[in-house]
Length: 175
Length: 158
Image (cartoon, rainbow over all chains, first blue to last red; front, side, top):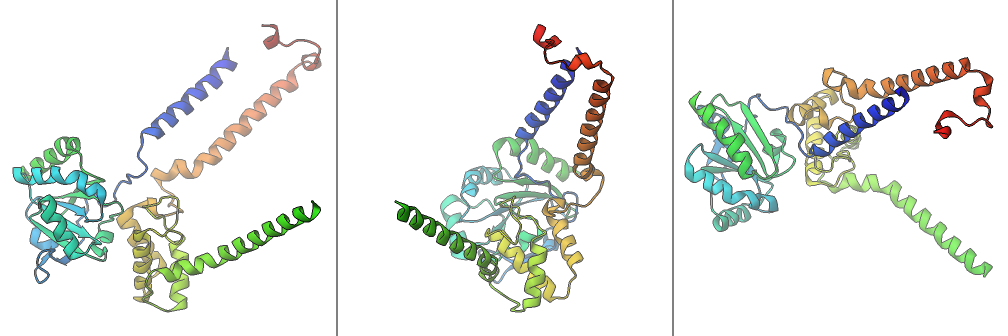
């Protein structure tokens, strides 16, 4: 009996591991930045080159950082959702226009709507590297103390927004 | 007929030499692709050694040295500038790990979360050797008749 149970058990274990492996998304690499201070930045804004925003300006409020670019097709998928989210005023969204041209970025916002309180302009992707960005769009939640509390890679879906991001934002705002 | 075979053989040989010549040239071409800030061969060489240790997160089975992805080019440039500023290899690897996690390292550090990764293969080998040893011991204890090919074994009898 044992000589059948053992291989069968081994097979079932292997099948279980393979099934678990199939459900993982290899593109989602857990960020080491979670619960760490958001990296410092100082960037000119997309709309006004002479105006700058830095990390310290946003301390004391809970905010969302959304990395996007006009060349990024997946950014368009989440955009309507972000526009709708910004209208509800749960928390401000700041954009990070990543490796883009100023006129392309502004044109894109003109066409699809602008959910951003302001947009940081990062033409060389330097801020992106500091935030560990590797797949646009990416979305971060940053708390009052300037700590990164959540990161979502890829387009934000209604489920992620409803079940993860919004409850977290409410919790952090009331904290 | 013989001549045609000879021809195609020659053509194949030519293709092979061309392909290998290209292959040896390729790495050089890749390094010159990103804008070179430090036209310094020493920094370039050190950068390539480091870049070969780092995983490109956009195309995960390639190193930053191999990849043509925009992010890989940016990171190569970042490494060049950091080396030019006098940062050490260790500092640069730490900088990358702080941002992208252990996953960027092609040789992840040995720690609790990577324990299975490092000792897993050895463990499997030990398990296999142990099983082999047990099976051999059992067969050693069996009577010589058990190995007689003429006697149907219990599997076949069923």
